[in-house]
Amino acid sequence: MTPKQLEAKAANYQFACPECGDTDNLRVAVHAMAKVTQDPKNENFETEIEGDHEFEPNDWMLCNSCEYEGEVRCFDLWRGGRP
Image (tube, rainbow, N blue to C red):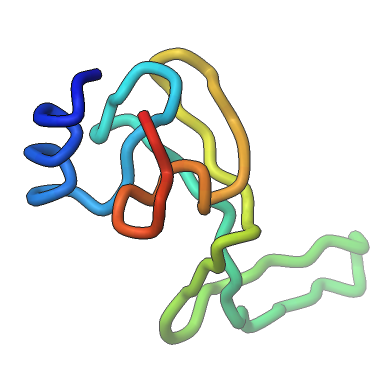
């Protein structure tokens, strides 16, 4: 990806895969609070996400297009990541 293409992409997107440049097929591990509902009869439990979720620069991100994975900081165009 040329510097001009990189600049154009960063104007519209904060995150892109550093391997293939994809911006549409990214997944990220997030932190969230969840309500836990337990069923003592069968040792099963369920969770329901409550409120917002967050992720940090050192959390894990995955590109489903090329299967590249790494820390969020590597995908972050606004903070020095380079597809």
